[in-house]
Length: 269
Image (cartoon, rainbow, N blue to C red; front, side, top):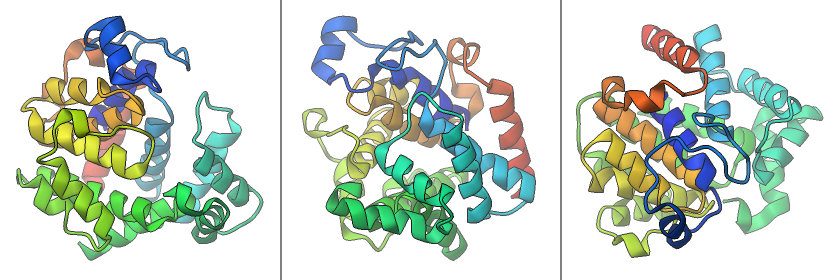
């Protein structure tokens, strides 16, 4: 939870800036600088963490994964006018707010957008949550891949590529496998789900401590907050909260709630 949030906040000011421009302006970003097109404060995270918080709050409150409740919390968040909300998410939540069921809203969006929207219990819950906003199979199975990787890391395994590639969707599986051997120049880091997943995994497998994983991820540019969030979640699961630089945590928005929610979810597990 903390890793996801600090990765998001570190990357937020770099969103939509390509890596060459990041290098020209900053050399390398490894501090919470704030700014960017969203004009974030240092330590302020974006929709990636805000939506993860909605899921965590729901699970912590109910003691289970309830997609209807998560969807309602997503709508409440949308109606609070956040600084940033993805177009696919906005459209799906618009359907949800209009009375469309959680397991149909994302499918309606996918039908409208076409190709551009791209453990048994773990798999089903991951699929269910993705369906609320992103019903494209690439999105759904990317969620499964990421959650399988996190579970493996929490269980003490370092074979994250094997865990994440054990999914049915062939493009997701290929993305996971190739991320381990890709060169930095070939790593794409735009807003496409497979680019985000691949870039985060590339950062994770090529660096060996929390700070370097997250710094590598956000300096890829593009959808830097999302890549940073995913890489941070992986690195957090691998290295633990104690490995997160205190200089990042001390300015992190809602640090205590993130910690409390993580503790509550651990209790429930």
